Image 1 (cartoon, rainbow, N blue to C red):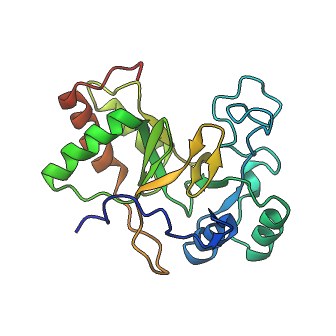
Image 2 (image 1 turned 90 degrees about the horizontal axis):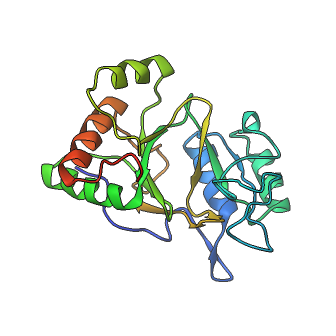
Length: 221
């Protein structure tokens, strides 16, 4: 049975003044699902398309860790409460790999078409995160060696694919970044257990085939 389709804008969120309460979502990820998270860099208040980090050409404004660094990601409730009490609007950043899922991401338009094709084929997918420009399919943790062997065995891999493995990061819903809101395109089922996610091999095989068949596999996407 596939994960629930569509958008669940209120999942993992409590409403406070009409906006999602980020700390509630962060605590669910960390304490119930054991996914290490940390706060991201908030978008620059003088221009939301810019990042508040020192890099004037940051390509993922607000959607990455800065202070603290990625190694500080934790599941400790006290630390999380301290972070989001002091930075209530900070995006939630997942440290991918290890105890947490990894991800395969691709441009939003390509992802939408690929997922529609995979649905018609009856493929089971796990949660899918939608940012304004890219969607990310969560997968089981994988090693760099495992990924290398998988890609080496393929005749063609679209340059539009990105891989978020060990040492990587990903903004989680309901974060607000410099590029816009991060939401669930396919939400995890509610409950205390960590969501099911598929193997990376199955997802890469299916996505590469779907991109090729839908004609959106160009590297520039």
